[in-house]
Amino acid sequence: MKNSLKIALLEDDDDDQLLFKEAIDSSAIPVELTIFNDGLSLVKELKSEHTQKFDFIFLDVNAPKIDGIECLKQIKEDKIHHETDCIVLTTVINEELAKVVYETGAKQLIKKPDSFEEFEETIKHIIDK
Image (cartoon, rainbow, N blue to C red; front, side):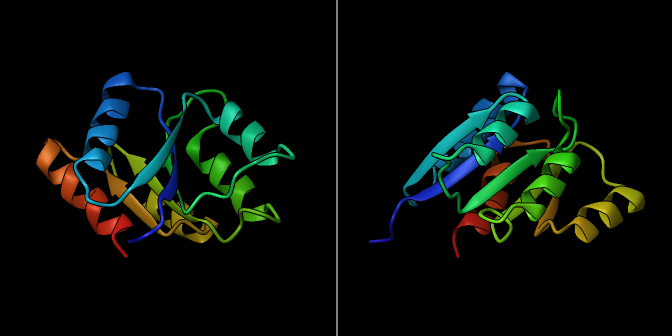
């Protein structure tokens, strides 16, 4: 049996948090999900001496306090977390955003889907390596 995946989600919207959690729960893969409501709390956790190592970090571009792009930059500069797979979530994808996200080191840039089923399939595809 596969070990439990450790996933961090940076998302301030309660509905999007619930959607993500339900998509994870519908997967057969055991997951420990940690939700951060703002970028500052995520960055503080990652820089704390007792930080946990995550398998995936999902980042909302428009997160408050420290946005998802700045969090991504800090993660990729961090000695402990720089190799963690980071997936950036956004409501709108454009060429400029895609360029910044991939140049900064994200594994994927994903448009937040319109349906639960689409989101569920997207998340399962990412975490089911």
